[in-house]
Amino acid sequence: MKRKIKVYLDTSVISALFDEKNPQRQFLTQLFFKSVESLDVYISEVVLAEIDDTRDTRLREKLKKTAISFKVLPINQESSILADEYVRQGAMPSDYPEDALHISIATVNSLNYLLSWNFEHIVKVKTRKIVNMINDSLGYPDLEIITPAELI
View (cartoon, one colour):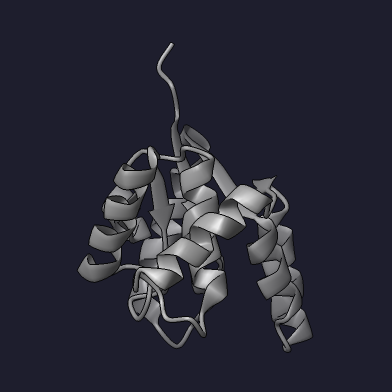
């Protein structure tokens, strides 16, 4: 039996499903979600907290309805320490600790991919290099950080 690829979705992926301001990203995200049953998909407590912070109540309910179908990973001490290390080493700005947590939770749980549409802090070469350098030095596996479009 073939093992399913384990992927982590940050909040930007779920919200892109409903983002009509960026039709191409929305379309690519919808295509990705058509293949989601062939994957082992995870989110985290960070994603749920970010969804809870959504001001638009209608959108918040749509996001919650989508998110409940995925396995939820907790924020634990190990992922918090690793997130702090990502910030300390410059993989993530200190004023974006949630982004570091998304990455550390995926890493600590040995997921294959972290999917994001966040090009400012997460899906970028610098972040990938620093994250995987830290992961290698601490004995964690490499983490592929990509957009949903790359798994279609």
